[in-house]
Length: 140
Length: 140
DNA sequence: TTCCGTAATGCGAATCGTTCGCATTAAAGA
DNA sequence: TCTTTAATGCGAACGATTCGCATTACGGAA
Image (cartoon, each protein chain N blue to C red):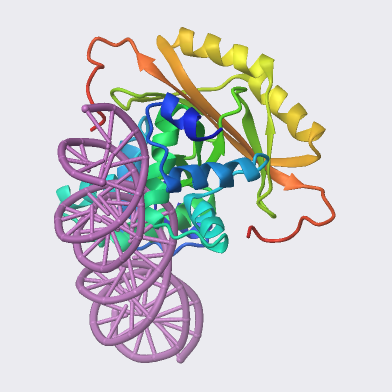
């Protein structure tokens, strides 16, 4: 994902956009808030505004580059890997894991149909307590 | 749900609490935001503060009287009927319908288990376009 | 039934995440 | 290199929610 990739999406290859991409790629496994991305950039010595990070992330979302998830009203972003997945989050340590389940997907389609809906998206979040030894820590 | 019911839950039976209950009961089918409840009370001639509505709703939630749902960062409340359900919302008119599906529930249990989670809650929202004739209206 | 202590209220200020407005800067085609 | 136009950074504005605090009103004790 570089200069020419952005242009291909109709986005000028500006410094902030390239840097935000770098940060997201360096965190492929995780989910980052706009604030997280912003801090990562500052830590890397970049001079960028928080508003720009928000704008860039929204543009990337529109362009299909990233996916925005809504966890309790906060937006978390991740690069769009192309594979849909849902989330299971630990209510204690805040860890977010991904999963996907064909059975559930199929059922959802069916349910939408039964209710006269053309499904456009869906979000399934399971909350629970994970059993990791390092868990009983508060979300960072 | 009245005076004595509140006391049973360890909540003083104050005027604002009783009125909020009234409003919620008058809207059993729907999902209301704190603002919605507040407006309904004002319209009914009640003198209540928005902060109090928020506080009361949170207390009711804690007491297990109401359920709080998170739709794109906004909190919507409804009386807890005791039956768990998920939601399917129309991205055009904002209508929210409820459904529940045993297959999905079962699968979720299984998935949580497989990931070493003790499931405590979950939220499934399906987004789509409903086919109602009165639909293509923006959310109110 | 009245009286009191404490919890609940109402108000406005504060908070948090996010967006906007606008003057300034920097892509990228000519 | 020049120019046009979109993108940036800043701080102010925003909407939902919470907080702080002085005031009020439950509801148990007398």
